[in-house]
Image (cartoon, rainbow, N blue to C red; front, side, top):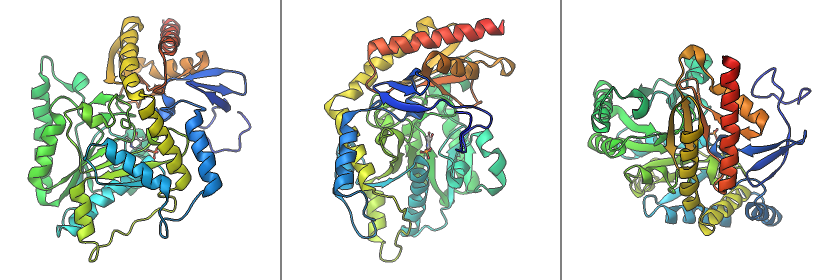
Length: 433
Ligand code: PLP
């Protein structure tokens, strides 16, 4: 739309107007049907126009849209919390619901700080996070993350308590012939050094995405990384926070991404995106029992004072509850594994000039073998959109596009997505020659 009054993401670009959605497709005013190959940014796990959350939203709006959590709790929020805790097999004892992933991440950080205050360790103010991570666009989340273009203009007003170590990106960063084990040992050593440099008694938590999303493109933690990190945190009395805003809620083929990566639970976990699957803006924080108990026991002396107007929103919770119940009832997580394998296989077989297909479940990235002067991912993503498929352009740290289609995708649609992608890659390569 060229005469838009909306402050759009990019100046000087005209965006198609999305008017309706059905299944894996979004329809625009110009009559284009776009296959939502990345669920936006790994959001629309149930696809578009699904009757279950729509009905839940309508019914909840009719009975009670909103009741402020300073005064009340409400059934959908209570039921959603119970469902998530039950699905987590005892890893978590409480759930808090907010609106965006950034809010969930910031609350996770604040809860870690609160935990140490309640534990009589107020000196713990430092956080160790990782380069090329993304945790959101609010100032705290931007400080923790490390997406250079997003940070650049705001660097002087970011928080200095976040200290960045290397990401876990075995497929790109491992030296020739280096085993996964040896690679992980180097990274663990770097964490140890960061703890020593900061003084381990000042570290509040280590924060990370178990599968890096927006910046590196579905890059999973290497084997042994999360268990070894858990041991370091335990040794130094620091908490372990996972940001599963993008990679969680079934996206990689398990309910939590960490369940596919050594099954090591965190102390605090941020979730979002696929929680409400875009039907409502909703995110959450899951707290392990030890964290919650410490906060609860010290609440008289150290109450946690941190509320958001829309936390525990009744309509948002009702939508998320319907989304999550449908994912369970329709056995969509097994479909994520099946369709993820198919997508990965087809991408590997058909894509020309490909460096790597990485990822898990329906969280897959194609990385091109390019030098910085010959990048093609951005043109490929733009061409895909023209040809009828939306795919996610990863950050400039890689020349890559990410696929994260809705969990309801079927074989025919996977094939269509790959066909559009392969045609687009060929077109971009031909134009470059
Ligand atoms: N954390 C991760 C891992 C994300 O990928 C994102 C968004 O892409 C966020 C946090 C921030 O979520 P939101 O954009 O909903 O604030």
